[in-house]
Amino acid sequence: MIKLTKYLKPFIFGLLLAVMLLFVQAVCDLNLPNYMSDIVNTGIQKSGIEHAAPEALSENGMTLITTFMTAGEKQLVKDNYFLASLSDKNTAGKTYGSVYPKAIGLLYIKSKPDEVAQEKLDTAFETATWTLINIMREMQDGNPDAEKTELSVGSFDITQGYEYLPMLEKISKEAISAAREEALQNDSIILEQGGTMLAGLFYKELGADVGTMATSYILKVGLKMLAIALLGGVATVSVSFISSKIAAGAARNLRRDIFNKIERFSNNEFDKFSTASLITRCTNDITQIQMLLMIGIRMVFYAPIMATGGTIMAMRKSTSMSWIIAAACVALIGILLVIMAIAMPKFKIMQKLIDKLNLVSRENLSGLMVIRAFGTREHERSRFQAANRDMTETNLFVTRVMVFMMPVIMMIMNGVTLLIIWVGAHQIAESAMQVGDMMAFMQYAIQIIFSFLMLSLIFVFIPRAAVAAERIAQVLETPESVVDPENPKTFNRNKKGFVEFKNVCFRYSGAEEDALSAITFTAKPG
Image (cartoon, rainbow, N blue to C red; front, side, top):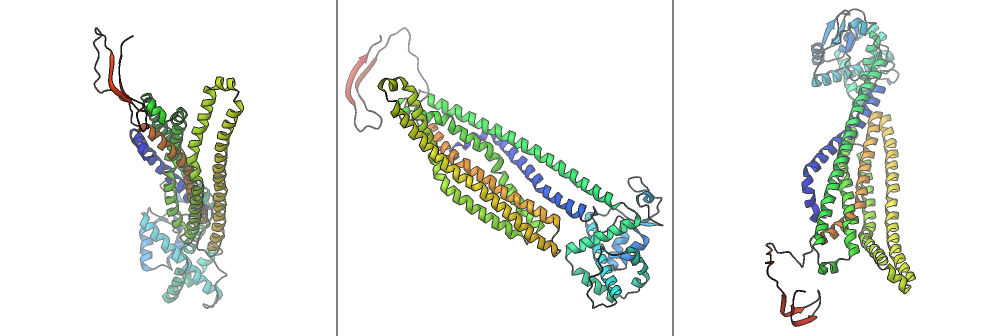
């Protein structure tokens, strides 16, 4: 097959463009589960609240939360929040009083911090939230050593927190430090969820519509997903169009060259290749290569990109469940190797059986009158049935082997899905993973498995196409026994010549000795 790669050189630009579009398609496909995870984690579970540091705070709320911050965190909050009255307007031109209808007095409004500052703010608010909860638990129980399970962020009454504010401000630094250390023992997911839940309470205190915030976030992310899906669809259609053009162009050039080559064959070359074989090489063999190019450009490059990208994205969601993907990949590779080892030899036989069937059919049709004259119809029928039966049995064997592959891959995929849900559910119960992350991990695992499925489909075409390419290369590389001179000379038409042979010999191709020798004769015109 490597011998025919020169036929791809005229289409190298289209091939590179197709690979670039495949990268675009892969990036789009790999980002969709990530956005789906955001919708579940943030849009549904966190009511659309992205950050633990709220956009607006009442004066009491700011005093309450900063009580449990370090001096550096307080300075960070001071640098990124400013006081505003209810009559002031935001960047959208609306007054803060209309955005937060239950607000009283002045508000602390968050400025536009950069990404680094925003991350630090979120960390400060998350830690302060759980420090507050730990302190409130101690005050509620009246016993620092008692198990603190009754109070949580979800059940926290912010009005009660304001009532306890004078007492909270008098708590010693040692007690706050101890509560803070206990808060930092929590997993990052728990810290983040607690911070966003308290931010939601601050929003509700000011009268903000949290339900609208959730809907707005889901719509915003959903529109992004729609745009990404449309971009991926355009890339998919473009790759299909380009790959079809490349495959059709390469097949056209192959047919042209092999036809021109056969046109220059003499009887010596026709003795090496049967007419039926040459017909198959010009039609079916080239079609096999065309199909491989058309499907291969779309899958051979796309599958490794998806498998690699899916593995990276899945590892970002959960490294503790990566063993599931590794086990699935090992099982898939083992199954594919076994199936290919069984089916590959039969694929190589297939093209020869097609040649044999074409040969019998052609001989039957070309010698139809002779067959009728000598009454050998039963003999010819048995010849055709034998060739047809051999090809059918081989085809059925290959089909049965390949049909076995799809159910096994689907069984592995369903097993992986169940295993991810089982393991992920335990991690969600332990607050080590979020629901959206588990769903995204499951999607990435399916994408990785489908990448192997695409490669397995390519393996169906590669053996037959490889045999077909070798057969075409044999025709193209066959030296011609009769070659036209590079500088032909013309005869003088005014003179009449004759052909004279002196002491010549003749030998059939492949014969051990001459059939004729020491022959001298003259062939005169007429």
